Image (cartoon, rainbow, N blue to C red; front, side, top):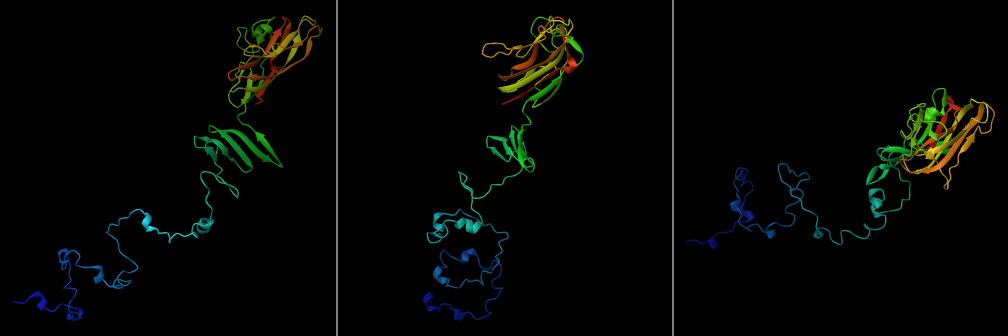
Length: 320
């Protein structure tokens, strides 16, 4: 009986060209079972046996699943990244610019940021994104607070002009003709020049900016704590044409005379003046006010003394 060793082994000479055709290697003719474990070894595939001819430039992976894995230390050896790649300026030379360190850095050129708006400023903190700096138009720099435009610096001609759109300021005029002291709550005592008393007073005609801080009753309420400047003036008439007609005039805070170092300075008009027309009444006050305090002109009028509504002026603004 013949043994395996008595048969001649199949070599490349035993396979004649054309002996194995495409039909012989049809689909499924060679199955997985035909290849035992380790039947094809590294030594069986000579160097160069699989080359560019066997692996064309275009590899069709359609319908295939490609599995990726993260890069690990073993994939990058010391020789692959050298000092030249990590040298000063190497990154800039390759990407075209030098990146800015997020933790802090110094720029060698100008930093340009978007124009943006008050609601979404160009530069803001991460915790308050609608408060910061923006650029409304050409030659303007704005500061927004809580999404509102609070400050603008604009170049006009050769100078920069600073504006504050929300800075509180107001201008009031009176309304109507002559008013005696009893129109404001009585004579011979300090009263506010408003329309809150039973006798009735004029309604102040108000123009203002920075919010609705002055009402038609004449009271200006401070929206924030700070120093404020106020001014009041009027036109007066003395019915008796003698020294009996006079008035004290002041600007009050929270309904009382404004004090300075414990005293209550105020003006006096028409005293010992024998004339119908009393010289113009004018009064000013610069005062620190807390948020919620209110200011209004005060008068102390004799029975024969009257003022004219159409000539009344009351105005003020926040100094800072």
